[in-house]
Length: 321
Image 1 (tube, rainbow, N blue to C red):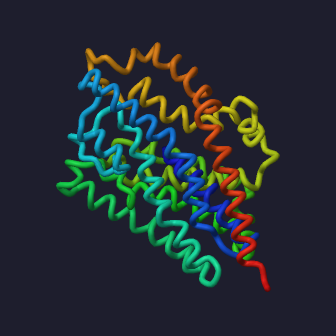
Image 2 (cartoon, rainbow, N blue to C red):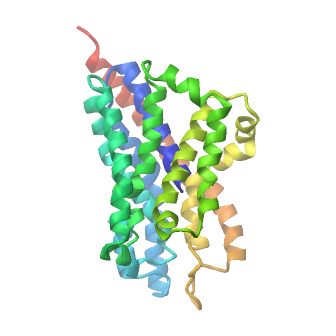
Image 3 (cartoon, rainbow, N blue to C red):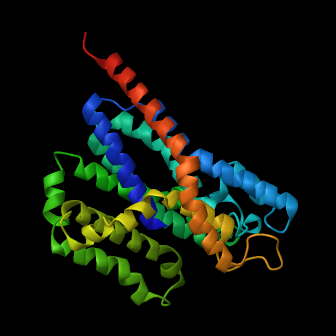
């Protein structure tokens, strides 16, 4: 999940930086329209399906779980309200909370105080670790998945945002490239990412809290290395048609794996839904591509049309007279 968070922050901030470079501003309205048309149709379609299945068999999930899901705050749901059927929606809540704030912060500081923008991200990332640790050993840590709260889990998205800002800055890109393009960066990424596996079991705090920040740093370095090594074997493998297509339908895969497989090892026994993992896997393979082409794609086309219309309008508004 951390890889998706880092990649999400990197890609979205790269788009924001590109828009700012072209137009001199960022249309927050257009940003929210694009995010809403990409995320909400499938998400709330899943929530409606979850509600229907709950009406058929109330063992599928719970009213509290559904309420947190519809409110888009499942990452703040107490452990007692968590159900395997709904569990995967926490990560989408983290992303949406982060992106409710990030475009405004980007727009506020990008033009005149880019260093402040970088500093804010660094401070957020660095403070999230002690905050996560403090929450984990508190009473809240026994009742909630505190590592999923927006101001702890969001640090992985912030790491991707930080990388994107560095690579889209004329001031910092050359200095970043001198390291990120090297084999040393790739070796460092692998070492930092795998370090928690070698230290596993020595400390509960390291396993439960600190290890995640090492993995995040390793993932961020790896993405930075790939940016500067597009001709590498790793990049060519990731560009294979099958993997590219899986990336295209990945959002559907993520949502439907909850619907057809449920998440985590604690599936409720003797329940109407989901089906056995054997049948659920095949249903997932069929549903994800069908959903993309016949349900998600129309919204994506609408997103592109509206985005182009608003972008053209915004450019007209900022043209010099």
